[in-house]
Image 1 (cartoon, rainbow, N blue to C red):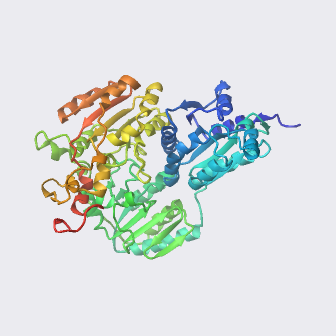
Image 2: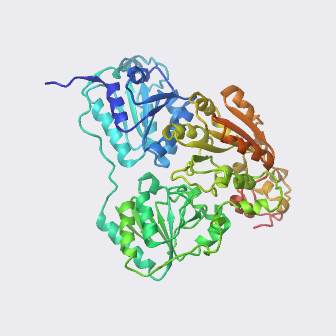
Image 3: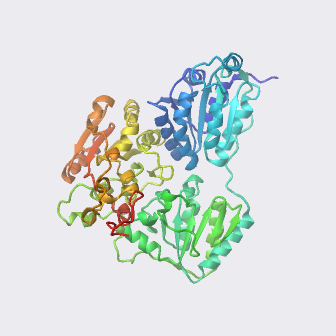
Length: 586
């Protein structure tokens, strides 16, 4: 008896539902319309289509949804839509987020007319491989579906790659193929297998345990622990060995930061000072799933004999490397091997110290009376507001550095694109988070420059009746860009007086367009507030629990205020500063 045929569009819908997809993000286009209509017309569909304001917002939204749900998909149209989406997908590729890109392409007839007659349909470049070739650079698998006979194979192959590698994949379907018929799915999709060579994992664990003998050790948890779903194994290691741990900034909230052994975020020079100084004194630092990216290490040199780096590929021990090791197996074996040797669990803080000492210093601020509203005073107040019902989303730049000290009670409760660092990520990301975790309330910290990139995402949140809170931290400039090239304006009393006037002030091109951010709710919907002092901030915070709709809070920060975590940058020359007679801080 032959199988009842289904459309290619229905085949893809079934596979996405099998992967637990509840929301499909994107921008509608005629080349993807047959697929979207297939879902729309199915009254029993498990997928809700979320039409965003633009492709980059849809991409960031999809990325964040994947971080919370384990898989996500975005649908766009050929050329103009796909190329706009590219930045977001590159971020998902760099930060290992399992995202499916669905790109509707012109029909077979359109493609042939382009080849034979030079006739370009909408959004075509004349090269039928232009879109897929671009996306091959930022995906682990890419397929072009030009007919129904191999459509099931190609759909399954990209989805299996997405599952196995946990990174983006690309599926391009010609418009006329969506309605063509194929056989329904039969074989299940693959399951992600975390194991590799267990002999190598055991060998690596034995060597690290031998290094730990007689030393004070500490663990340094990274983002791979969350990406591979091995938080339980990580906690078993921590609790069995009774050893303290810090996380990288990318790995912030891989487990609840209320855990008694958690001692803060180590981000190299950009760490809170006490965390940096104390962590570096540990005799053996064992990194677990920490990525060696510039913003994740903050200038810390990992190429030392006292630092081990274990990832889901291998373990670097000193100058040697043991390959083909899964992080999960390594942690399990390391737990066993450490019970066979005598070592000391390094204590970053004395037992009588307050457990809050490695978080933002709330007490320090209140004892001074009423300080100005700066990045540090703002985040100190916010630290006591955030709890387990929130998921924090921090944008690149000063907001990310300021937010790293917030105590996050909820596992996976801190989301930031801390490696790719596309400014504007946070606001649309909050949409994806709320869709994946409707029981949580996203709280966004975003700079004014980043907010202006993607602020339209607020309207999507209003349309979906989300209760997202967006704090726009407005210092009037691209602060992080100014800091990187010339930190002189941020030095305060230690400012160098250069003979070149431009080096003494914020560059004109880093000055922002001044917006009344709280007024945007008149366009997008929701509630809006503007605050200039800590007292005004306090008044707004007291109202937030009673507000059930999306909210923008415009927070005015002094132009040259910076988070303490990046103050070290003012002690060294920026890229535009030269070692001349006026330079006295080097």
